[in-house]
Image 1 (spheres, rainbow, N blue to C red):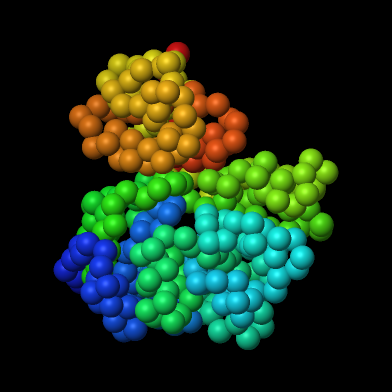
Image 2 (cartoon, rainbow, N blue to C red; image 1 turned 60 degrees about the horizontal axis):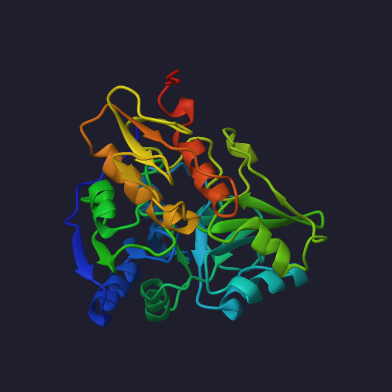
Length: 336
């Protein structure tokens, strides 16, 4: 039986120097705090402190075989934790600070807690661009492990209220700096036998990665595996069932079924829309926020219009497929 922890008082503070200082002080005690990044809100703790990292897993209810992304301020800090080859350096130069995570060989004396990497010999690492996370990294002087700040498997948080709704009473502090810009978790890549493999779609498209590495001839492939077996996990965000609302989700829907909340896109209308103009970047930024609103509605189910699989649309569809995965609820809900 999982150990039960007494509830804590969760405070929400607007982003400021004082809020960052309070968050840094909590992290120094081993507590995790929620902080926005350019992708989603993250639950940050000292990556070098095993007990602090364990608190992340406990607060989220996250399985220990699922590794975490480590956030650092710059390439120099990243190189203390991971071994970079030429292609990794090119990608870091092109996309850092920003929403790209590199899965790289972990240095033997990296100093991060083994729970961060879930026992793997690799480490997932990125340099964030958001002012709040960067300020917290500077204030703590530590690499920060930071998965999304929500209960494991549920809809990712793009606003502070999403964090408080999911983790209120489990964490001491949320830094509120408004809605996140990108709205989707970072793109994750790994070098495998001379090929750059996209392990998770995200704001940086596979086309952008290929261009950075030299164009059409660059060996880049999308690896959209949705994994159920713990021993096959290579990086965060690969679980088949993930990003899921409480209600059953139907995707590629031309219209709402009976008692469904419809999330439209482009010319397909709904109770809400990802983007009335069909803008994929707007759709990505609005995706999780729209799912939160749909999940809070009085309808029984959720339907989402078809979204093109071009560019960042691939990342949107990746999240929707995982959110609609039938195994998450033990049922496979379909409509004609």
